[in-house]
Each structure stands twice: as C-alpha cells, then as structure tokens.
Length: 527
Image: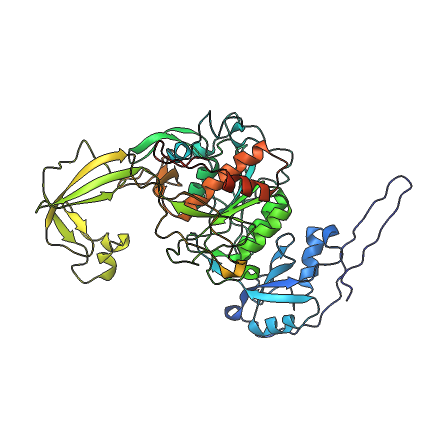
C-alpha cells in the first residue's frame, strides 16, 4: 500500500528535493472500547517507510498515525505517544487490547509489545582508577569535546559539579538544542541539553530524585574542592571526564523507567549527536534481545558511532543473572574500593561489630558511654523493625541506639572517619549480576567492573539530620551498578577524545583488553 506521495523539483543549477506533506491513505480501523482505564501504551514495530530517511518529523508522525483509529481518545489524550526514527521503525500508542488485535493484522505491522517498566539499577574513585594528570587524564584533555548522554532521572542544574567555568561550547558535531520550551531548565556549556520524556509529554528535566544527578557527576562532574558528606571523605570531587559536556534525557522517575520513554530518550540522543550514552537502568534476566529496549537502543547507537554503556544489574550473585547481555553494549559490573567510612559497635559484654556510616562525629561523640539499644519493631510493626524511615518518624529514640531485628542489650559506638587500604579490594559485589547468558551464545558478561559502593557524587539536595534547603554544595553516597556504569562512560569518553576515528567496538576492546594486574605492590584499579 502506498503511504505517501512526494514531488521532486529540478532546477537548472541544483538538484533539490522538496518533500511535500505526506498524504496518508485512510485505514478503516474500528474504534472499540474507548475508555481511558482500558488503554495501555504499546510499542508497535512497522516496516520502514520507503522514504523513511527523507521524512521530516511531522511526516513520520503522520505515517505512524495512519495505523491508528483516530488521533485522540475521548479523554483528550493523544493516541500517538512517541514516533521513533532511530532506535526502531515504529511508534508507541495508547490502545485497548481489542484495538491492538486489529493493528496486529494490518499490512506493514511487524510486531507489538506492551511497554515494560524498568527500574533504576567522587572524591576518591578517580585516584582509585589511576586517573591523575600524569596517567589517564594526561593527554586526553579530560574529555573535552565529548558529549555524554545520560538517560536517567534528570539533573540538578546550578550544582557546582556542572559549572561551565572556562568550558567551551559543545563541539560542531553536536546537533541538539537546550530543552523543551517552557520547562524552566537552563543550559550552559557544561549541560548542553535537558529533555524529559513521560508518556508522550515533556515535563521539566530537573532532577527531584537524585539518581540522575549522581550518575551524571560520576561520569563528567567538574572538579569541586571541599566536597564531603556530613564532613566525611572530604576532598576534590571529580567525574571521570570532568571536561566533557552533558546531555540530559530524563526518562525515569523514582519508581520506574517505562521502556516507551527510554526508547524515546535514546532516539533523541542519537538525533542530537551524543558521543557516549550512559543507561544506569536495570533490565530483566529473561528478556530476549529483541524485547530489551536498552539492547535495541544500543544497537541503533553504535550504528551511529555512539558508545553505549549500561549496568550488569543488581540481581546477583547467581550465574546467568545478567540484565543486559547484548554483545554490542558495554555491560558494567560492580566491585568494591578500599575506602570505608568506618564505625564499630561495642556491646556491653565486650563484643565488637564493624560497620560503616556516613555520620562520623569523631570529636563530639562520647565513645566511653554505653547507650541503650532500642528495637524499632518492638510493637510488632514489621516495617519499623526494618528501620523504614517513615515508620520511625513518630517514635522517640533520643539517647538510644536503634536496633533492627534484635535487642535488649547496651552498646557504645566508636568512629574512625574515612580509612583506606581495606583488603581484599577490589572484590565483586555480592549483588552484582553475573553472566553468561545462553541467549547471546554464552558470551562472557559483564565486560568490565567499576566501583559501586559508597560513591560520593553530586546530589540534588542537602542530606543529613538537619538539611539546609538553600544549600547548593550538596553531595551524597550512593551504591549499586548504577554507580559503576558512569565510571566506564567517563573512561570511554577519555578514550574517544583521543581517538575520534575509533568505532564503539574498538573503544570497548581497548577498555577490556588493556587492564593491568596490580598484585601486591600497588592498590586500586589500573588501566
């Protein structure tokens, strides 16, 4: 069936192509079950239009709307949620199950999927990874001229980690713009774009969760003096590629990352011309590659010369628990560092238990005094017994040490601030997902590992018992493979800044095959 008509005009001097508005042949698709509660977002894969590469955005949307019964629901919501150009040939739309059945039988429709929902999966780690002015950073200009796309929960603009002081504009290869008009988001030479995707709408890309801000600053945060969390780990915070630019694509909330939004974000990042894409988004261990939005998006990205980095996932330690196993994406697992924010609980009978805490009142806490241990779940509240914050808000534990899961003893606390040299380190995190996967031919995954635990990086607000709502110099500790992936995205940016002609596969190979064994005469991860 012919979907469009194009006219070609010739001039005596030049050959011009003038694509007129696409004329769509109407499809008689019945409107059924048009109740808002019965509609779901489905991803529809269709044959590429024969003039796909020549279609403008509006023409491509018109082509995709031709598969739909009408343009809007009775509720006023548009049928078409997203029109995809790069990641897949297809679109996301609001449909009832009956409408979906009709669309499945239409010529040109290849497959349909109901949108899945994914979950979200530093002052010291640059040094730990061997990044100094002499090594790693030396000669790379710290990622200058590279644009890293972050697909996450957004970013906090105005944070010192994202200052554009002495930063040049984005490189000529950058084709994007700042943001959606009216979002209130302000870009600079550091954050060159901020866009948000939520069910076909485009809200503000400002981060209200913290995850995206943290991830972005690990990958490419500027060097910030005096960074700390409640006074601990004080030093110079820096991303792996501190002079790289950031393009922000908000596709996740605190709860989830709908794959229709994730595909739209990757599609936009490809259109904008990023050099590296970081996706700290967990997946599903049972998904085939054709149903994994991160795998599909990564394939489209590498076809445009973009390095794609994602997480192994937090589903370990069992074998074959890897979330993202596509051969073409850099999959990152999690290892520990040798830094700890240490504390020791000493019970009244003399037994001691080592632990970690960001709260380190070394000079003000009386460690000679015993304090009563109070079990938070003493009233039978299961959530309180797990110290869920909202369940503790109405309880008074002044002068006590809160104990989860056991208690009726006394103890004291001793604090030792930040300590280094813990061994064995690095060690694979217990939760870090393992390979291999039979569905990729048994290819070894993850490809690399990077630091994950208590990573200090930028945060969207102040933390602690008395947070300052006006604070801008805000940092926090976070842990997970979400924190490991942006370390590698930053490293990939350093490599690409030195070798602009290298393909994503060559950059992956360089990162994987050049690691050096450290043995016992040094510490950290050297590459």
